[in-house]
Amino acid sequence: MALWMLNHLSTFVLTLIMVGGIVLVAVVGSALACRRFPRLAEGEHNEMVGVVLGMFGAIYGIILAFVVVTLWTQLDHTQTVVSQEATDLSPVVRVTRSFPPAERARIDKAVGEYVHAVVEVQWPRMRDGRPSFAATSEQFGAVYEALEAYDPATARDETFYGEAVGRLDDAAAMRRERINIATNELPVLLQVLVYGGALVIVPLTFLYGLRNPKMQFLFVASVAGLIGFSLLLVLVLDRPFAGDLTVTPQPFKESTLSRFWPQGALGAP
Image (cartoon, rainbow, N blue to C red; front, side, top):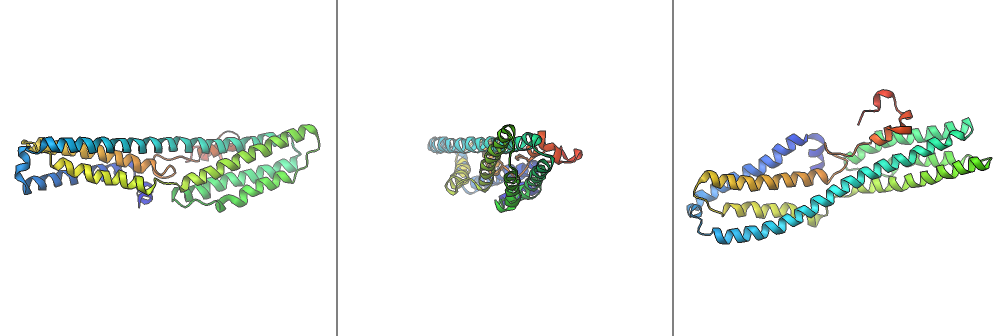
């Protein structure tokens, strides 16, 4: 459900649904609580409610901050992994320029097919939460086979050949890490704490009574809005390959790898 929302709804629409929905539910809930228990407006329990709300709010805030920082770090790391994989592939193409034309063409063809498979086949699968090593295994294996088929004839070629193989090994490590990241999500326990905590904090605000109904609703809506934005941030950051705030395959279309793409496709996501 979360992936469908991220892939089919813009961040603006998600904000309206999540933040607006939580604020609306909170205000309606507060109004119903005040109607059912009119004495809440007198604030006779405000001292106790304030202590409980402050304690729960502090604990929830720490948990929420930990989750958001962790997910933001993960997003930044994912971008680094994608860029590094593309960076490791570039020298494989660049250093083989000294190889004989037939071998160079074979290696270029294999790298080009792998880059296209990553962007056109594997990326949509990661976006939908269905990453698979098998989606590009054949193409990536073909790059190794193209290199293995070449037998360096000179010490100079051996140096370049070793560099190409080493960088391809590095790209393989980044490829595995990228796919593993695409399968990860926030642990169930943390999801319970984050989303369950909101179900505790928001209703608690109903018990904090203010004689002015407008101020009461403003207080409840402010807390609900802040929590709604925080939950939206968690939802968006939890899936680095889905939604508007996403890691794109653009590094696979830049620098040396841009030769495998038509000029008009370089700016495509």
